[in-house]
Image (tube, helix red, strand yellow):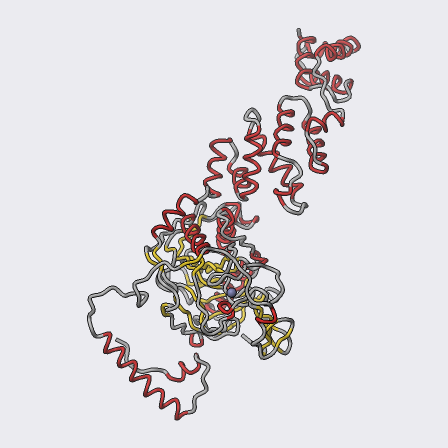
Length: 94
Length: 489
Ligand SMILES: [Zn+2]
């Protein structure tokens, strides 16, 4: 069983959160408690198959048919900035 | 200096040829104006709900059947969490532990190897093992400008099949063969157009190098941004060299599990991120989607599996007497194979092997410089069959036939009409030919003596003279018979 210690700085980085040291310590403590709780759950032996969904429902699919969606203007109406009929965002460097 | 073993695994993304997107009804189209094929679902607006596209699921299961995979009885979709502007809901819907297809393999066809490597195939008939195939959504297309980035969501949510191979590929050449063979099979099944240059098929390469004798694989490095079939070979070669340089201390870097970007212009790979920076995707089942039971789909799709390139090739060899190479060429493209079979079916008296020669040696040569490929071929299967029948009956010479063929290709028309128009109709009228031969015999007694003395070349001389006298219209087979009869008779 993994030790219930969470690397709060790693998680914050993945979530794109800039935490102050106090916040980091605070959340570290809270999240570690949650992990402890999960560990407690894991310690039970359950006589059941893992389920992929909470409800016993299957097979909700639609036929492959297309239909029109938004007009271009509608699609872009929430864009903070537009350029070349596209969503403009700060330059992304990979 | 130790030898090194190269191990490659490929992750291929193929766009499916569906009408609508994976989780919404927006049309799948290429080249539309930016952001004209969107809805709340594929824009990732809060509250929008995804619904599975049956057509995409069918095409993925069909792909799995063509590649010998198995489909688990229940499959589901999961969220892969990460932050990137091409995926505004901050997760991609994909399949984690219950994908549509497991196992299987991709057969490597001889002609799928790079041309210069086809003579030296290390493992002929190799089948590269697959790990899995899963079905997910494509992301939006971002374009990077000088000062900013722009995003077009037309592609967002397009059904994307990810075909993951085992680390079972041993060379750059095998990687190319894998992609080409896979592409042929996807096109045969009508599941994807699989054109790398158009981004319909994209490949990420996992590559590792280890010294001979070492059991465990070397450090796995992933290459991204490989956009063409030829680039994949260059990228693998360059990265292999780099890794060997590191192992031998010529390059001070260290080999750590990482992702690198291929720069095709510079011919080098550069580091994108180390494993420590890599995403922790925190997969979990997507609560918006319901698991799918596959049994009835599998039963329905099984009969739709087409004859595959290697099966067609075997049949062309056994049924039509094609050589292995010819059969391989003909079967490599579904439409070409269909054209050939149509030509064979026109007249079963025409030798299928001869038709294969014409298609490969003459038709493909001319088609190379023509838009639209075999489907736009001006020579219909019926016309080709007729031409070959005429040649086989000895009615026109081979050179004349080539001329007729060129004319048919340029301007259409039937073989018989072109032969008439060109005056190629051969003289098979024995009376007329006998008269010509009689005349040659009468004026060349010394040649007659030579023939009688057993000189076969002199016999050919008579045939040549008769052909000349008839201005090339004489049927050479009949002339030879007459000469033989009259001179030796
Ligand atoms: Zn949509």
